[in-house]
Image 1 (tube, rainbow, N blue to C red):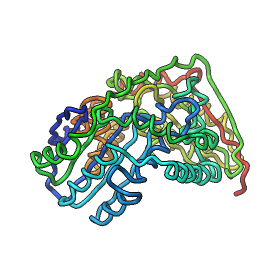
Image 2: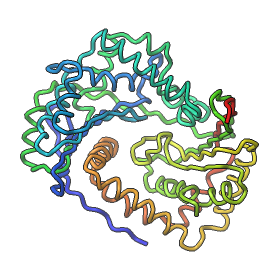
Image 3: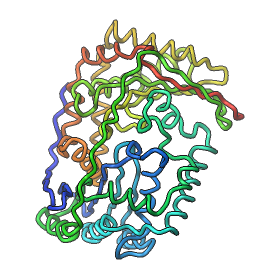
Image 4: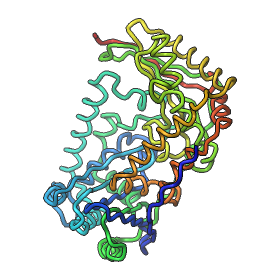
Amino acid sequence: MRIPATRFPVERFTLSNGLRVVIAPDRSAPVVGVAVVYDVGIRSEPEGRTGFAHLFEHLMFQGSENLEKLAHFRYVQGSGGTFNGSTHLDYTDYYELLPANALERALFLEADRMRSPRITEENLRNQIDVVKEEIRVNVLNRPYGGFPWLRLPPVMFDTFPNAHDGYGSFEDLESATVEDAQDFFNRYYAASNAVLTVGGDVDVETAIQLVERHFGDIEARPAPPRPNFDEPDLDAERRSAYTDPHAPLPAVAAAWRVPDPIAEFEAYLPYVVLAEVLTDGDASRLVRRLVLTDRSASSVGGYIGFMGEPFEVRNPTALLLQAHLPPDGDVDKVLRTVDEELERLATDGLEPEELERVQARMATHLLRENDSVLGRCLQMAVLEQQRGDAGLLGELPRLISEVTEEQIVAAAATLRPERRASVEVQPGGKL
């Protein structure tokens, strides 16, 4: 089965201050999307400042050079639009979706905070409190909070960038100063360290003029050198366990390193497909075996990347499997079964039509995501930033469809127990 590429029109240029710009017109609906992606994420945080990338994302909504606190919210929502931002391992994004006639408003808002956010003692303290409350709600007081994205990296990795808690410790957050925040902005929030994408119902020439008008006079600052976060692969199995006081049932997550998602893209793609072969839907191998046949797990999932973003992450990353177990579940049995199924796949190959079914589902999912103006803007911005190729978005369904059975089998053969890191959740809560 070969799925054709989707051709999205793309115009790319760079302003004199280094800001890379992608224009992706789509006149099918009277809406526009604007996304700004900065090349700074959780892995860029300095030691002693865990959680800082996420904290700074909050600060960027607290007013800017010409706008008071909450003005960004008011102007976007007053135009009938929506907005948000999010922090990832390798980038931080900010975005708006608005009626087409509000494009210039969105560009002004993003340019104003790229130029100078309001970093004050008051804003810093109240946003530290907001982030601490997020940690309480999403990690400390939630069943399986931080599982596995916060719990598995320190088992698999040794270096601070890859292993530390990206949500942050209360001690690190509370000790942050206005000077720290200003230094972080000066270092990472340069125009030359960002990509701006404008998509939807736009005239390309008009959009270019508006971008130049609002972003062209922002100070040029050099982008920081991009660190190399790579570290050696595991040469022996690593396991860890912890008790979750709120979890009513046991769970386990396991991960194996995969090839560099950018420098070794051709070798990496089979692992993206393999994760779906193993866990996508009731017909997948591990769901059939663990959930439907053995009943040793109540649910199974698999994906690439600790945040489940296979095409929005740099090296190193991993293929992850996670399972929730019944009350008397046996984690060792689950891991042995995973090993057996991987061995069977590596030895016997795929079943008839198994790969085509998975590829069709993956292509459908990608095409559905790409059908959204805002989704397209965000993904194009990250692809442009990390690979210099926003147009790759339209090629992904075709590339997925060209992965062969031989490549899947070879990838499965590398997922050996001695290359695996796993973390077990021991339940401390009540059903």
